[in-house]
Amino acid sequence: MIRFYNVTKVYPNGAKALVDVTFTLNRGEFVFVVGPSGAGKTTLAKLIYREELPTRGQVIFNGKNIARLRPREVSLLRRQVGMVFQDFRLLPRKTVFENVALALEITGQPWREIKKRVPEVLSRVGLLSKANSFPYQLSGGEQQRVCLARALVNRPALVIADEPTGNLDAENARELIRLLLEINRDGTTVLMATHALDIVNVLQKRVIALDEGRLVEYAMQESYRYGT
Ligand SMILES: Nc1ncnc2c1ncn2[C@@H]1O[C@H](COP(=O)(O)OP(=O)(O)OP(=O)(O)O)[C@@H](O)[C@H]1O
Image (cartoon, rainbow, N blue to C red; front, side, top):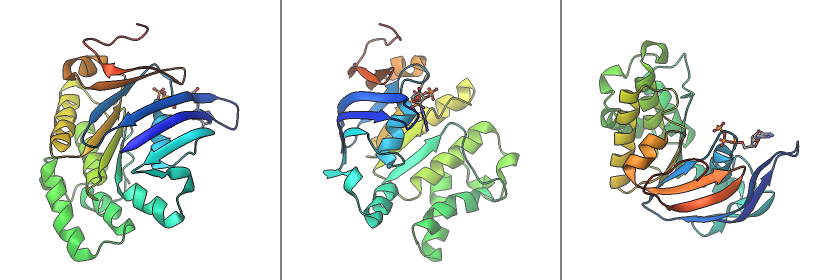
């Protein structure tokens, strides 16, 4: 589904975020991206979403070099990718329903489809009863589940979760991971960047480990620790 070929990303200020990174992410996989702060995890996510372009090398999504996509194809790519962020990024003056609905409005879905799909996806993350609440009325765990609902409502082929449990307590983190695993079992590919090595070690999924922008490991590990 996604291939990185010798991808290097240097930001305009000279910061080398990724150096010669090559890997393949297959459809249906659940893969962790780990590495210390500044290792390049967020940059990797941004390159897939085409928020940034590689300085060298190629990012291939479903057989296409994403640097060469036309604007219409970029919208199609983004519709296939759902993003979940550490800081939720919900609109504070919109209700839970409206926050999720917006993702469908942007892709031009008709109102009857929005009316059907938003409650479906809210129910999936256990938040149907909060549809008319505003983000400030929700706990951190609930806000993150709204963010997940927003990522899922366009039925993406891939969900990228960038440090999604970073602001959650242990119980809410477990619930979010449970949901991501469920989504993955239903066929959605999941790429999750995280510092939470305890979660990584329990789940025994493939791990892309970055260190100062370099890919240092791409394997399923018994037990993963930084610096080994
Ligand atoms: N927009 C930018 N402009 C310049 N440098 C950047 C930019 N974004 C990231 N960097 C630099 O690129 C490197 C990788 O950053 P990135 O955010 O990808 O790391 P990360 O692994 O996600 O870190 P964290 O775990 O702290 O979120 C860092 O040295 C960072 O300072």
